[in-house]
Every structure is written in C-alpha cells, then in structure tokens.
Length: 186
Image (cartoon, rainbow, N blue to C red; front, side, top):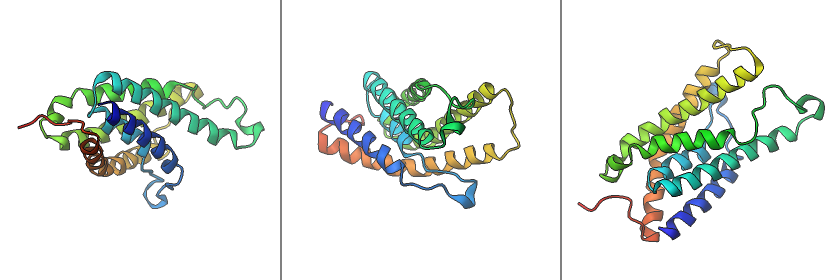
C-alpha cells in the first residue's frame, strides 16, 4: 500500500508536468484533456479514504499552483487583483468532493466494475468545471450561459472521460508492480 501510494504521488507530479504540454483542441470548443484531475479521480477509487484525501490535497494544491503561475506570467496591470481569479485553495476543496464521489463507487470498482468509475470521472469533471464556472461568475457578479462555456465544459468532460480507461489500465499495472490489491479476489 505504501509503495503504491508513493507511486500515485509520483504520477501526480508527472501529470502536472505533462498537463503543461497538452494544447486545447481548437476545433472542439477549446476542450482539454485534464490529466491531473483525472489521475486524482482514478487514483481516489483505488485507495483508502486517507490516501484519497492526500491525493486530493496534493492535486488541488498543484492545480492552483499551476493556475497562479499561468496568471503571474501576464501583464501586472491586467492580472493584479483580477476580479475573476479564485483564491488559492479552492481546488483542494473541490478535489476532495470529487474524491468522495469516487469513493462512493469504490465497492463496485473493487468488484471489477471499473467502467462505472470511468463514466463517473466524466460526471465529476463536469461538476468540477461547472462549479468553478459558477464560482467565477459569482465573484464577477454576472452569469452568462451563452458564451460557449457550457460547450467547452461538456467537451472537456467527455475528452477526459474517454481517457479514463487508459489511466485505470496504468494504475492496475502500477498496483501489480507495487503488490497493491485493487480488486477483491474472486
């Protein structure tokens, strides 16, 4: 369990780096593959609640750190006290909620029904992005659902969900190497 948990943390750090090199798909509403949140979600269903909380904290911390670094590279006049920027740490709370959502299907996952967890990753990513969109709208003071954002959120959720079987396959291989049991023995 310990070696698998350390491996998950290493994969989380690697996904943070890989996420920087994945461009948005301009032909599909600028949707993106969200590797870091997906790894947190897929990892959450394979570990206990305590390790899931560690993954959620590290994933949210890394996600917020990436967003702050992206904003800080811009013009100081534009990005100084930007009204639509969320405070550091909000992702940790949202990642924890997503992790608990995945923990709810963990018994089914351990019985070998991983496809339900794969579908739930799309739902969780959609909810995460939608709540983030609502929070930004609340901070700005206006909501506009006709700006193409819902299409982008939906497309990003679908793209990320499509990638989830690959992440689950990778986690099964890492668990085998580390001697960690993900599934119940039949």
